[in-house]
Image 1 (cartoon, rainbow, N blue to C red):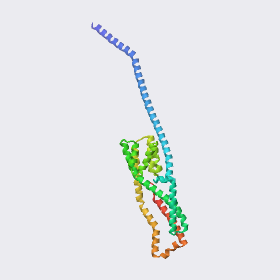
Image 2: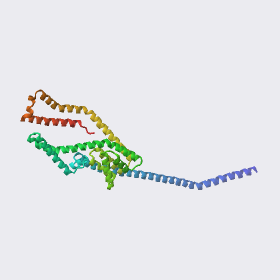
Image 3: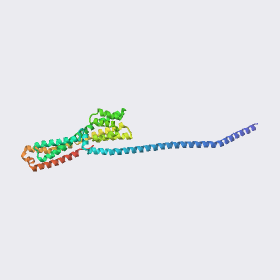
Image 4: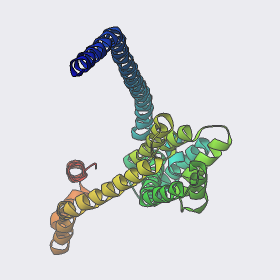
Amino acid sequence: MFGIDTTILAFIVLAGFSAGAVAYAFLFTRIDNEKQAGKRLQTIKTAETDRSVVKATRDRAAEAVKRRKNLQDSLRQLDEKQKTNDQNVRKPPLKVQIRQAGMQVPIERFYMYSAVCGIVLTGFLFFAGAPLWALPGALLAGGLGLPRWFVSFRRTRRVKAFLEEFPNALDIIVRAVKSGLPLNDAIRLIANESPEPVRSEFRRIVDSQQMGMSVPDAAMRMSETMPCSEAGFFGIVIQIQSQAGGNLSEALGNLSRVLRDRKKMKAKVQALSMEAKASAVIIGALPFVVAFLVYLSSPNYIMPLFTTNVGNLILGCSGVWMSIGILVMRKMMNFEV
């Protein structure tokens, strides 16, 4: 009985193993196929992800190249405009100089004033007893020299006043933009509240905008009426920001800081060159002082320079050479920052 039970039990165990082996043999292929399918699915997902990443990277690179090209084109156009503005700054016509000086005088009336100035100066020297050969020179100096010198003086003083206040105006624009105001409102605020000549320059931008011109184009035209590189910098910053985007407040803040650093550098250069300027003043005044002292001590010794033709010729040549020396010293002492 025990032997029969053991044989039956062994038969059942062998039958079970056989059934398991047959089931595993039939299911092995299916399990393997499912694993292969899972691997292929994972590979496909990974490939799709890689393609998406590559496509996004390619799109970003293409966008960066396009943006860089647009920026280069913008800079090229701005460079051409800046060269034209620089020509107007270096050698502007007389009509433009009068406008840059802040004078509301038509060019015809300016010529009339120049003629009157030349006639008045010539008549004054004639009645003062000046020789006849000096009168044509006085007419030219009064008709061409003095009026243009006055325009240049007003122009230089206006530019200096603009540079004194322009960084403060930029700081106000930066604060207004950071607080949420649009650029148009910030420019209008400067046009209403800032002192001259900054107010009039920004008023031109507001007027141009009301006539249909964009703010960047109007800002680029500021250098036409304000002949300084700082006005050109402002126009270039606004133009680049409008075309390439970016943080306007940060760009204008950097421009304000650069302008203040340039101002400090100019003051430092002026302080360092004061010694040379003092030496130039002493050297330039020395001939006149010596001539006056010689006249006080022995007038008969120096009067032939003023009473004879040879003496007048010597004085004329000395004045020309002295003027050349003063101009050379002035050129050596003036530094562009």
